[in-house]
Structure formats: C-alpha cells, structure tokens
Image (cartoon, rainbow, N blue to C red; front, side, top):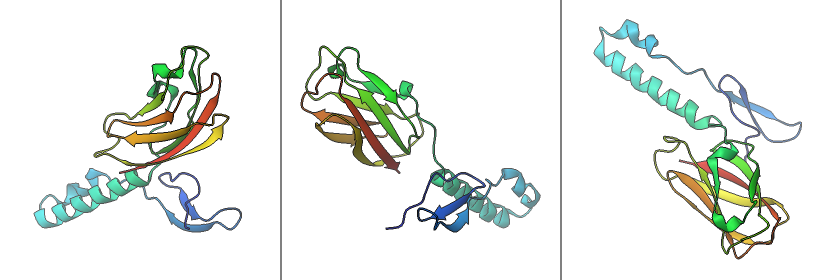
Amino acid sequence: MVQLTGDCYVGEAVYLGSGQGHKHIMQLPEKLQAQTLARMQNDPVSYEAHKNTIEANNALIVALGPGVVISSADCLLSSGMGAGSKILSTPGTFKRGTVTFEIGNAAIGANPSISINFPKGTFNAVPFAQVTQNGGNGALKFSYTESILALKITLTGTPTSSTKYTFQFAMRD
C-alpha cells in the first residue's frame, strides 16, 4: 500500500514511505498567477489554453493541500452527549483530522452524535469519508454520514458518563 507521509504544502517536498526510507517523489509548485497571461491577450487561442492550464494546476494544488484547520468551534455535540460533554481536541484539517470528545455526566441519551461542520465551499459535492475510532476508552460502535456541509458521527447505544472517544477521519471530493 502506498501512503504519503505528513501533509503536502505548497513549495515543500512530498515523500513516499515511512521511517527513514522516505523517497522524494515531487514538490508542489507555487500557484500560477493570472498576471502570467497578461502578455498573451492579443493571442486568444494561446490565452485560453494557458488560462485552462493555470486553472487546472491551481485546482490540483488546492486538492493536494492539507485544507483549512479545524477547531472545536466547528464541532457540535448533540444533546444526547449529556450535560458537561465537551470537545477535548481537534488536531488536523477538514480534509483529514482527529476529534476527541468526552461524554457528559448527566442527561445522557441514546445514539448521541457529533457533527464536524465544514466551512462553506470546502467541498463542491458530497465528499467521500473514511472514519475510524482510534482512541479513547468508550466501547460503543458508531456510524457516520457525510454531506456537503458536515460529517456526522453517531454512537450506537447509550454511552457511559465521562467516557472519551477519539475518531480519525479523511474526506475526499
């Protein structure tokens, strides 16, 4: 299985593999600017061809980039999480990240959920999500649904008070 290590930033190298055997595979270029086209305005065919190339190149850079950083303000716990429930951490971005939360200590309901709300325009269509539970001491199973506006993770059953759950997710257009 091929896996990129770390995030890809404009102007930084991308490496393949893990450990000390990283293999340099590419460097993300800087975005091309529309000013590059200014000299071609008298040649409509070349202008359109270069404009399309610049737009495609810039779209690729955005798609490969790490995305906008997520914060606890972007997450919404349902009332079923109970009084005193809270988001503990949200490292990562809307494209790939982790969210850790703690169940409250009173008024806990069945099948509570957390929604990670995307900023407008993050995805142009319903994204494909991959979610895994990779931490915490909570034992409940989960399901998830994705929409153009949010990723919603729902615990199956009624959680125990003060338990913690950590989920890792990756989103793709």
